[in-house]
Length: 96
Image (spheres, rainbow, N blue to C red):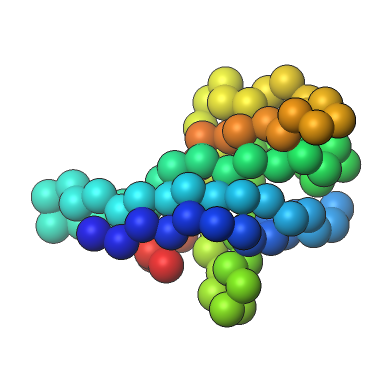
C-alpha cells in the first residue's frame, strides 16, 4: 500500500491554502480506499471545508483528488500557530 505525506494544497470554491497531509491506502476486500489527515492553518479555506465537508487536494506534482471530511473531525477553527487536523477519506474512489 502507498503512503502519501508532506505538503499539498487544499482547493475549495472559496480559494486555496497550503496544507500538510498524511494519507494511507488500505485494502477493503477487492477495493482500495485512501484516507488520513490534513492539517490546515488558513481560516477562510477551513471555513469552506467545515461548511461543505468537501475539499480537493493537489499534490506538488499536480495530481488532484476529492476528499470528504469525516463527521466531527476538526470542527474548531485554527488558531495562529496551531493548525486544525481534519480526518479525511477519498471521495472519488481513486488513490494517489
